[in-house]
Length: 149
Length: 221
Image 1 (cartoon, chains in turn yellow, red):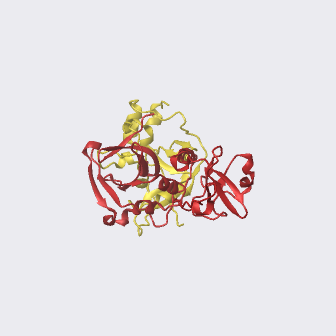
Image 2: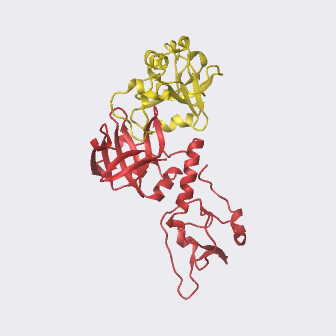
Image 3: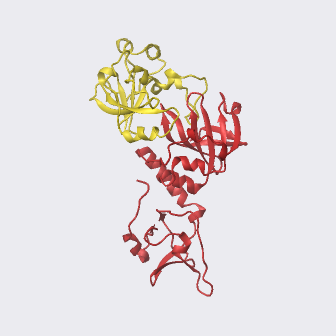
């Protein structure tokens, strides 16, 4: 799905450049006009860290990548060419995030909120209840709250 | 489709079988397999991409996938594990074998946390695994289940019947008692280590219709 320049300019710098140059395209199943979706996301938090959810919690692994090494267990793809790695994942079922929280490294808490169209386009895959959200620059994620349980 | 190479452990290439849990799209708990052996892999550091790996028996994979064995226990119950400090390529990994007693349990999943099948994708994988598992040598023996008085007996002389599915497995070890001087029937309870109410076996054959009314526990939800 090729996007016009005006739309590309809404995204953060790295994704924006990739889209403008045609190096990546968003999947054809991406939706720009959709009803808001209640989703759950695991965010890295120590047990006593109750800071509000911010855009920092919505950085993709690719943005945060701290090592040139590639994770194991992933299909061998050039991550820089897969648009999903510029999006952030959340899930339609909280049990999926609860399962991730059973693993201590890093310690996590669950954030819950709405993926909404003004924040950016999304792609939902019902087979794994996964929502990939491509956030616009300075999207407002203050609607996401830590789940008290 | 060619499977993804993940690790090389003592000259065995481990290929990705299935990601069970991920975080930020990074697999943190997954199954690998070499030519015949399953391994459970846990990512202990998502920044440094360090892993621990254990060999697991087929029955333990079944128990893991169906929530019978906690995720933590499937690792702790092994005698040894491999610590992998990953390199930029598999050939550059540092792989160290340790006795399980040296494992820092703080890196493991929470106590009593069992794996849950939460998506259609996972359900499909588990069903395929179950089909392969039940077709394995553990269950290749054809048996007829008959009722004799109050006891359920397996007539091992019968060849045309087959256990189609063995849904509830309380015990993965079999105790077989041969009754000398009789046709080779064995007591079902003694064979499977479970009592009739707990153990559930489905057979499609008409002669054993009575089993179809037994309560079943479809562990692959």
